[in-house]
Image (tube, rainbow, N blue to C red; front, side, top):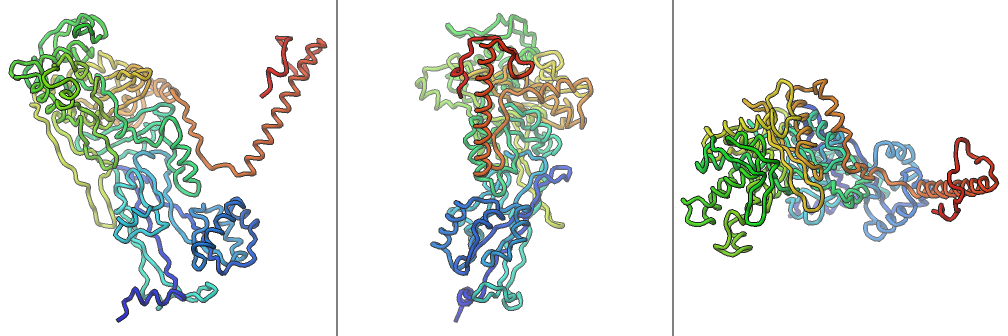
Length: 639
């Protein structure tokens, strides 16, 4: 008995199976605005065994490609798959395809196949959306028979995480052709054909306007922004900088642009909100204060005099000045390093613990409830866990029983071995905004297809900190913005609570950090901003965070704060020219070379004329040009 598969193979010489690719699901923002859609693209195929009298020069002209590529590709097809239509050029843009279609009759052995490519109308969100790339043999093996050579799948970001939902289901059509590959009709009148099924559309938690605003604020800077809706865990904005136009990694020039991005020293392909790990700095103090209050190490009214630092043997952890700290709110307001060193030391060395290691383990357990040192479960692959060093680690470094709180005092102020991602810092602030709990941070809000809906799995996590203690810390974070280290981040008509941070950087200028939430009561947004090598937290991170919060809550920036906005837009710590785009053709490169040679010759002639004019004491041949130094030598200007 012949199986259907065997029957189809028996008809291979006259029946061709053509894949019909489904429309990949759209990605929308929380208000229904399209952030990712599909555009038509075309694969050009050739069947070598019926190719005759091919005009390769005309083909190059029509397809805007080089003769070397055409010869190499045709030779490859001739050797490998000469008897069936084989991809010759993939992902041809609509404009070039239209030109090719006009001349298709001149190339009878050529055909085309329609595909879709992703398009990003706002040209942002590259880190969160990700990109598609051609499947590997390993991808095919793990796809359960869905993917074939030449297919594309999500490789990073949301496109990768939800690939199985976004991609849809392929269809196919069986067509009868003669030995010259001429179409004769559908096999069995199309009874064996299958229509493609479109993918699920995704409604994200992102706010497209806020996302674009954040990307613009971070231009020319290295770092990231994460904004979360505390009540749901939905991510409102997700910025990794330097970013890039995600359209660069679609279409025909994807490989060229990928190589340029990959080799860029500022690593635009690094997904900084979940993969860059930084010392959280003083943003760590908010959670540290809650631990102290919960364990009754010191009460909210415990007073401390700061002499300008905290001495540990011969080392002093410096503070911002000499001041009296009457309570925990003031400690947060002034970001007093010596206060937090003292309460950290008293926590770990408390007499209720038999050893410092037991005290530290208790501190570690409570701090990890704020999401530090573990993956939060965001719907993106590649999330880092940060670093909250363990007892086991310190026993290995210093020896069991040979270390105490003073040995690792830098942890108290978010330095030392403590590392966190921007997502973790934003999530910790969401916990404080909620007064003790958080939901798993998610990009996706829901998937929809017709009347059907699917929701991502979200889980609620609570800390073991009594809710009564949160009000003291929240009041302190309000004072930070109203009267403390982040006074410049105040927002008209919004009670903004937050904490600045300046993370020490042994490789250069310190990092600028800020995390906060607003409004104080019934908060709608929690945010973390990290700007590398930008100095104090109040210099860049705090203004950027306050502008983001104002834009989200007011949908605009107050007139009197426009100068701050423009200052952040224009503040470029690095060059944001990534050098991507459409690579130049050989003809364009030759033209550039000729233009450069001409410019060089013109400049040399100008130098020679200037020297001659100077020696003869005649005016320079160029108007309004003064020769200040008569000892100019021609060789000094040779390029």
